[in-house]
Length: 204
Length: 179
Image (tube, rainbow over all chains, first blue to last red; front, side):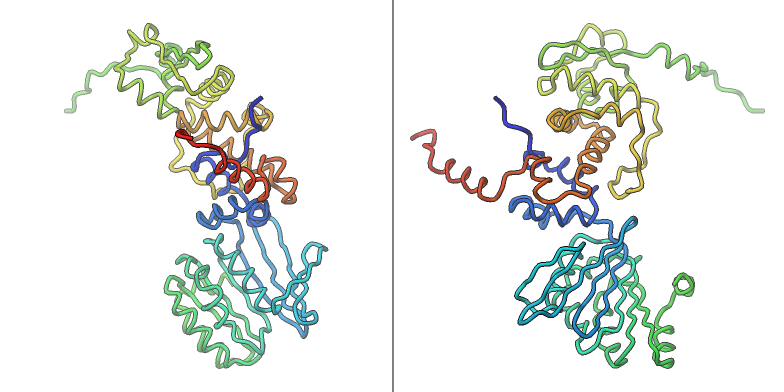
């Protein structure tokens, strides 16, 4: 009797075509199925369908909202004892890492499979330097963003964080536009000058 | 004054009604007839036909054996190629057109069980039929929507890490050719 067919027995070309047609959620689920498949996905980095990532923070939690063409998913990373609780789609599980570190680690994994993200929004991120996380934790992912992409960094507080952010994003030389919205108008003006494409600005 | 070149005018419909036909023999000795426009969708078959120098005159007398594809898959492939032989050529296939909806005719053709679909993909990969490969892969990919890792393991026939490890151990324990 012959063995039932397995996705892992597929030659590379059809396997990569199948993976390339999946959404970011399915890719993340598939990574959990099997070590060999996970290694293949991490090696080939199939493109996901994520378009926008929005992050925001309150006193105890860090939220990452992931938006694709058809769906929106929210993941909550909540401080819990010495670690954190990750909540998604009504399911919770505890991990030992710090909640922000864990959020950015997950984000890095996601960005490895997202070459077409148009916008990254940061809302009310305070008490930490997102630039530090982006450059150290998510550098690989963000460097993959192509020239059509844009970042909107929406910081509600502590405008001084804008400078290291701009510095960090400038290092991502493939990014065309950096757009920072801030309550402090003069900072906003400076950043609007920084954006060269007037048509792009009008789309926001 | 311009002179019209004396080129015979061939109506498209006329070509469609008098196609050049080729014969293909599957691995289990089933014989299929396929038109020239349809067989061109398979890069492998068309390269073979070109290299063998088959023409309209000798094509039917020289059937092409295809050892890697059985009759069942070949039947599906011939149906697909005949159906799509006059499709406009796509500029470049990309998986990133996610809004794509599989046409109803093709959806029905590919409504087969997983094992058959996997075998069809292997045959399509061998015959290098880009469009059919793309459609099959979309059908396989659609199965993953809203599934858990455990459900995907069953659907896609993927072993657990423990099963993989056991397989590797048994492979390393078994004697080699000289053992």
